[in-house]
Image (tube, rainbow, N blue to C red):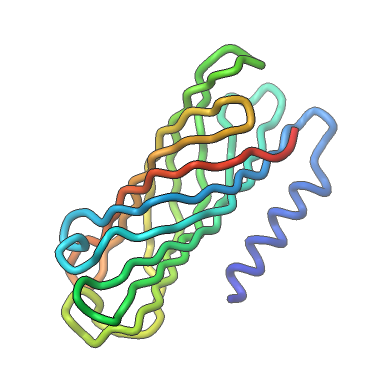
Length: 176
């Protein structure tokens, strides 16, 4: 919880102390999260969402961002579930005309996944309960004015297995 609080404090500092030429945007998104690899063998399709803060500086090409999310899956044929809280930081590269209606972007992020589950030890997670893992996430998206549609692949290793999922998300862009 301290890590999440720290992330939100950093986000608010970027909103409060940005320069007049810098752009800061908040993106709130949510969507369907489809498990892949070993993870799909025991999990149903899930749901999730995230709050991203993007900031771009004058004369600097990429846009930087921090993100905090929530993703949840029901384990097939059980009453158990997996919940992950990804906390990531990364860059996005936007392609398109400045001020244009449609802009394509590619991004990449690194961070941690806070794992919380109520499952017994089934081999996929060695320590049921709560733990943190290093994760990575490439993404591609389209920005239509203040609407953001993106596809993300998120992955980390746990107990000798790869835990990964593919998310299709729709969001709204707030800010200048």
